Amino acid sequence: MMKKLEQLRKIATDDISRANDSKTIEDLEIKYFGKKSELSEILKSIVSLSNDEKREIGPAVNSLKLELFSFIENKKNEILKSELEIKMKKEYIDPTIDLKNEKIGHLHPATQLRYRLEDIFKSMGFVIYDGPQIETDFFNFEALNIPKNHPARDMQDTFYVKDDVVLRTHTSNCQVRALKELGVSLKAVVPGRVFRNEASDATHEHTFNQIECIVVDENISIANLISTVDGFVKKIFGDNVKIRLRPGYFPFVEPGFELDISCLVCGGKKCPACKHTGWLELGGTGMIHPNVLKSADIDSSHYSGFAFGFGIDRMMMQKYKIEDIRWSMSGDLRFVNQF
Ligand code: DAH
Image (cartoon, rainbow, N blue to C red; front, side, top):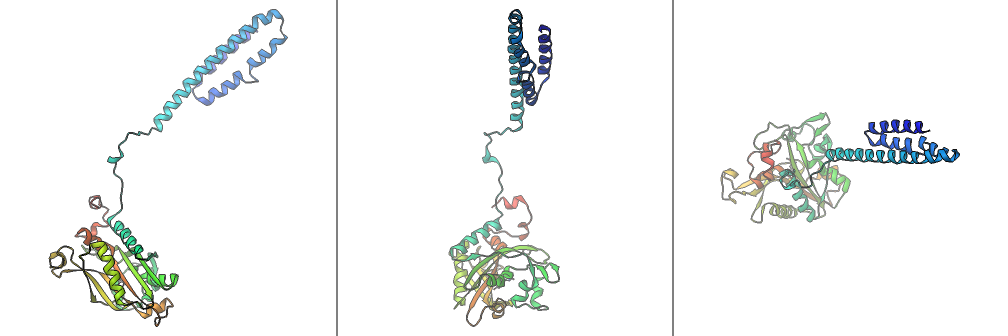
């Protein structure tokens, strides 16, 4: 029996000293101290021994048990400690890092302006409407009183996806969509991206942002148009800015206008920024053409409305005095980090 104990001590200590992860050491704990372990069998068998044998074997088994137990405990602590160290190194977070010096991204100035415009129009009771950038010929042109082969299509050459599907050339594509979906009375603005087949230069890009406004109700007149535009322009550019309407042609409005604001640089006194005119062009506007209302199944003898479409990038350029629109899409951090 003593020989058996000696063998067990040797095998167990060898096994335990070789272990180097917590799973192995747990298995060894079961192997040497579990209910079915050799040690437990030996302990059980002591009852059947003679008193002399008991006196000799009993203390020897106990001391082996204590010895192995403290050996395995030490080994286990050692392994857990080193595993914890590895884990801490891998998952280390430095709570003292000064985040103030970290560069965090921010919104592009055109997006900032778009959000500001949305807030202003929401405060004036408008809903924000969104529509597709890939659009059918019908909503982009046909429904807006621009039939196939109409010369006005030349002003808005675009990217054709298929014969009848284009990248929208303007946010006006949502005029009939919004009217059909939301019905009258309607006060909606549609901010978003538009596309043109342009040779780009300082004032033209193939991709830019517009904001469209559509108001249709009973008794809507040009006076409503002027007060709405005047109200939001003053909120964006300040109370001193004046607006003016010039006759302009757009097939989906009648009468149609070009809308200008007084030059932000010289305040109307004429300077190089406004090409010595005192005015800057913001976009087009007018009273919605009866044919457009008809495309949306709205009775034009009962309802009337106005619409405008202004370039958000153009407003951004004027607000921040940016001289070349190509900066906007350049992805150049020297540009965006100024805002
Ligand atoms: N969609 C026109 C463009 O992109 C701008 C425009 C003109 C929009 C007159 C309108 C409008 O709503 O009434 O050139």
